[in-house]
Image (tube, rainbow, N blue to C red):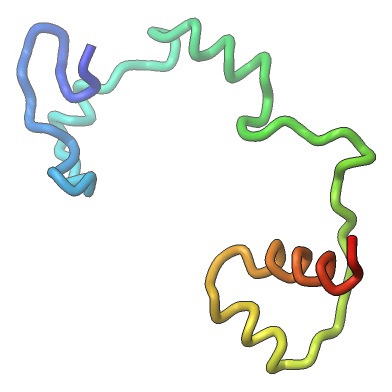
Length: 98
């Protein structure tokens, strides 16, 4: 069933064509259903705990360290955006021939 529909009744979509959520009305909240209406979802959430990627085996996990870097090096890494720590790790691997 479409998440934007009440059983048997049409409603205004909750999102626009860009995926932006509109301001919700009292009618929107009145149409919401309790979690108990979705027992399979409740079971998944209760049995799997945290959502997301499963943990890596110990040997493959990265180790947290504190590292002091020159400001210009850090600025250059961060200038490329998200993932700067992964890029720093890759650069160190290359530099060390690993």
